[in-house]
Length: 94
Image (cartoon, rainbow, N blue to C red; front, side):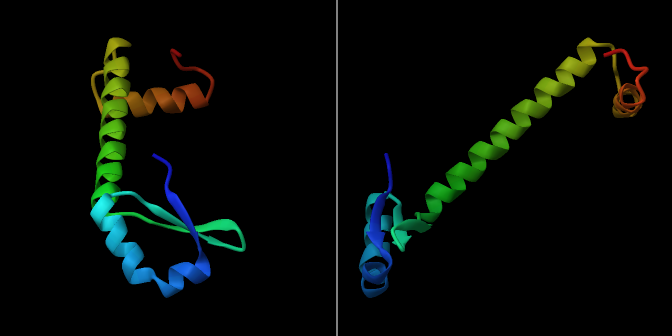
């Protein structure tokens, strides 16, 4: 769902109403300044959900990289760091 957009002057005049509406509907509002997106007002719950999603994705990526390293025969973080250094020096397993 795309955010609603309003002009800067209207937002300044109606900020309280706009924030109430954002919190009531959960739908973000983008404020335009000189007809360009300037800032987005979003409910805090949406921000927390996005942060949780980013953290989940990062954790999944970490686990995938760890599993890949283990499948290549590396057992410890020190071994992985040594292999990274070797690859950078042009003599790693790759």
